[in-house]
Length: 336
Image 1 (cartoon, helix red, strand yellow):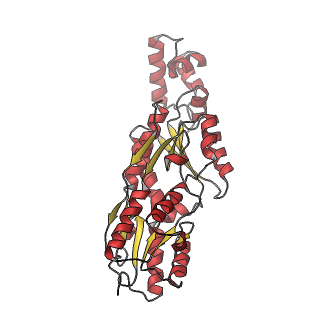
Image 2 (cartoon, helix red, strand yellow; image 1 turned 90 degrees about the vertical axis):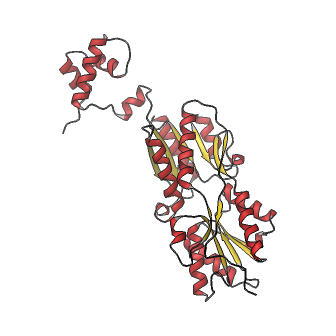
Image 3 (spheres, rainbow, N blue to C red; image 1 turned 120 degrees about the vertical axis):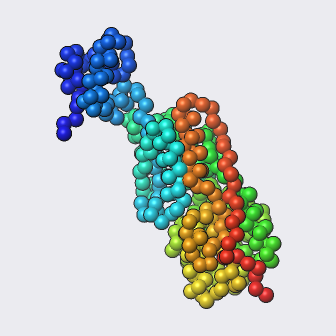
């Protein structure tokens, strides 16, 4: 079916294309009666202005953008991003906004920024979200320079002058360590995420202040494979830990598999704590103790914050709820 055009509307209404443009964009230049007739014809023909035409006219795109600098396969196995995107979509839909998602090369920050710049220059988005903040993240000043409304999801210390949404991981780290030491564990280890990420650094500082040194921390790329390798290294070392905290659920589940591979009983010989508490934590045996966050609501809060920035509101750093510990079958006092 041929897409209706301004020329089709003009021909049927008996007016110029300029008059149709004035009417559709609610600009002066036509009488109210003519405007009403043109709008009625446009509705009957099913006319919708193209995104490019709306951008040239300065109209809102009703779209926000999210570029993720990760392998495309990450979305299939990383529950955090799927829940975050679900929350974003749900909140944006209430305001008739859409989410534009694009994956970019994992190690190319310039490519990610170029995506944001092109979206903004072409009028394809009204605002953007930044994930996976790094300390001294070059994207932050670049985004500030081009002036696109933005919200950074991460610690305010890495967000520069952008609005930020964050959760205090130091509180969550203290909750996990206090719980495990309360059970009697003294040899704790951590399988961490990417060391360059601001949230990883914040967790590392928090664990260090609680007595967990970097010697008992192994940094990874958040994948199950890396989590398994890190677990094998910790279990094969001279001072085998009695409890391991993982920076996400995928790695915690991989660690549980490695413990079984080594013939260790979980939790009698090794306690395991995950982070984020996706539904998978309750499906494995034993079910995983985890630091639980409502990632869906976190995404909704990020969308709400970005819409406020787009509307011109003054927005600073917003602190979301810290993760809470859900105790399940993967933790117990260490065997004597």
